[in-house]
Length: 591
Image (tube, rainbow, N blue to C red; front, side, top):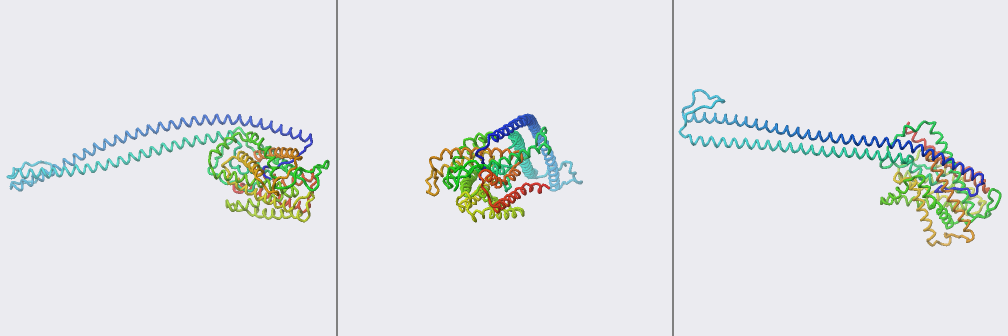
């Protein structure tokens, strides 16, 4: 059923007192564990704060060293640039002097040759001759000066081009340095932000040590329905959480973990028992052809007749109690539940909202249909037929996520199908002893399993985006709204509630009992997942059909035929095989 259908209506005073003592002792142990873990986590937070301050000081030192290196590099580049300019000017002066000297020697030789008074020996290139003045001295001097001006102009133009190229090259290098400086600052800032985020994540994890993101899908679905084992691997989230090392003061040996696992298995079994009692109480609440004898002591005729409208009314009465107590329980289990819900409303994520509301709608339909099924056929048979949902879930996961089932998964699907046929066949072969419409009951149980598979798939698609406890709280609220609207909208005569005015007190008491059992099963299953893990808790949840049939036989003497019991056993073993294979899959990958 969904929301951990829970049972048991009247317990013996001694059993009630024993349950209260067990719950009281569990609460005391939890308080002691809370204080111990809180003290250790406070020490770790103090140590992390100290390390954080050291890291910030180191970052500031790195920034100061970076500034000093940058200023030194700029000064070095400036000094080298000035030295290079002086060297260029010196080389330019030498080249100009050499060219002028060669040009003057050449011109003087030409003047001497033209005048007929050339020197008898060649003029060394390093000395200036004193030729005789030619007749056209003024004209030759003008030509010489013009050639000299042209040569000087060309030299200055070449020098200007070289200086421009050097300047452009220097500008490019300076721009590259500025780019590298900005990149270095960005890298340093990213490093600081990443260290800060990691410290904040570690602090948040230490404040909520049970907030394990990789078990969101398992916990959210199991916490609502402990009888239904999860058969799907959670989809990977966008940014997986890095593993945070455990505090060194907390022992991590196998001997220390064993009691926690045993406690988790006991709590999971208790949750399955409560959920089976819920199914039997629901069966007692719905009228049959003959009054049901409770514990062989007294007859109870029931409160409402089986029908779609009456199932809606029972669901609404149960949810009124759940919505009155669930916020308190959610705050106790996860103190940040209201922050997460506020972030969900402020996020504006339509895709996430569609998945949350869609899963709530499928869960609402599954609840109404399983109530209708339990009212028409034996509770154990209804829960067994409901277990068609693993087949639909596995096939849907194969289509949507490409998660092809293994060979064990295919054999389990065949086993579940054969078990469903064996479990449902006696109901068609002979009318059920408690009365009811067999066709309606079997169809409603099948439809409930199919719609619950839709809830599981949508929950898996929303994995990692919302913690399971606020996810469950939003689901409960949405189902409450759907139930209220369904009863407020005018329905046809076949689907509308049919309640006698005299049975309202019994219906209210029954709704309170069902709501309390729901929350009690939810609490037990939540702690079972924390101690033993969702995988082991889901294996215990496969006992739901068998335990429901057993309690129905003990409380109201509802007998099943051997063929139906065989089918129930086949379904239970097949679903348990799928759950065990899922537990062993990570170990095989690791090896």
